[in-house]
Image (cartoon, rainbow, N blue to C red; front, side):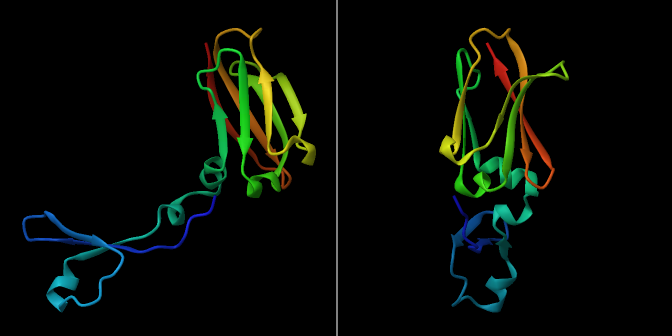
Length: 137
């Protein structure tokens, strides 16, 4: 999923009420332009980690039995390993290398695991590690 670089213009009256929201600010007088705010796309302000996590889907959360981990094609080129840890442990419960045959997703059977917080960790090919917490019921 990619996000376009769209600029959105907002216009407010003297009382602070929004009077205009749109993609085109042309045709407005200088006085109107002074009260127009430009909002940059959300993805421009996100960290690399946040952009990565936007392309990852963990479900269902909280998980009862099967945790599905899916990611987009862009992240598929970055992921080396996916690992599952219990929150208070340093040893992993699940560790799998990302291979092209996984079709950008994997499933972990967590039915035998205790309830609590778990960490899904993505080790990227450049050595970075990005993690996300999930809850097991």
